[in-house]
Image 1: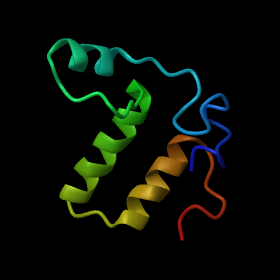
Image 2 (image 1 turned 90 degrees about the horizontal axis):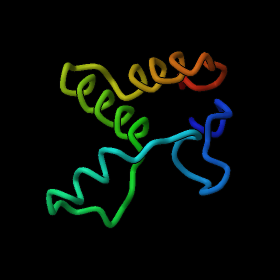
Image 3 (image 1 turned 180 degrees about the horizontal axis):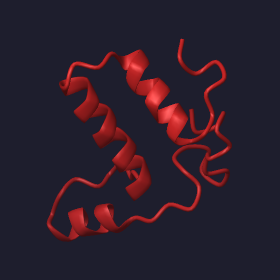
Image 4 (image 1 turned 30 degrees about the vertical axis):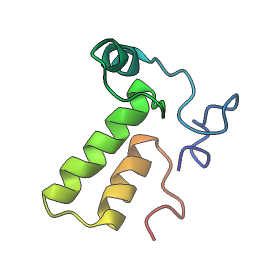
Length: 78
């Protein structure tokens, strides 16, 4: 989805471009697990997806909503 929306972090090949890492930095200071870094905007995507799924939305519906948030919808709502 990030790649198709031209929002991918081209340096890493994953996650979103222009990320910040404050959540992971804070988690590390608290002694939390930080072996797999997710940027702040990427974490927001995962939190939103989890919230919507717990509210009863289908994965297809949530994916379409996320694609719409990137103003890219062609082929994303299958």
